[in-house]
Length: 164
Image (cartoon, rainbow, N blue to C red; front, side, top):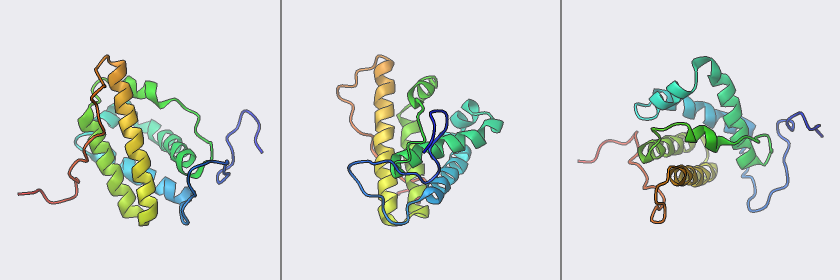
């Protein structure tokens, strides 16, 4: 049990409906995916400049903890994340489909490299839902017409050789 001022202990699961946690998906795997993704993202030529401008170097450890809480809540049902990510993303005027496509491609690669296939699929499916939801909300709040906006096409993997 926790009081109103603390987060549930790591590993605490809340009842959720709709999926079973795959064997092997745990806090360590969630943290590994988050840490590797952000290490790669910070060096990426498309999204790295955005991340590095918005998040100060000294703020990265806390950001990693926050995003780990987010994914722990999403995939393990821990309920540790209670933030509001949309306002922070809305405050980044240069965010575009190219950024979301790269974010999703890098995240997909990270999950595929670090996770067994069934767990990678879960990370990828959730990330694609989140990414598309964010971009549609941002477009709507910017006053854009979203009535014909569909899901993003998958970016050609950044680790694959170029097609000739």
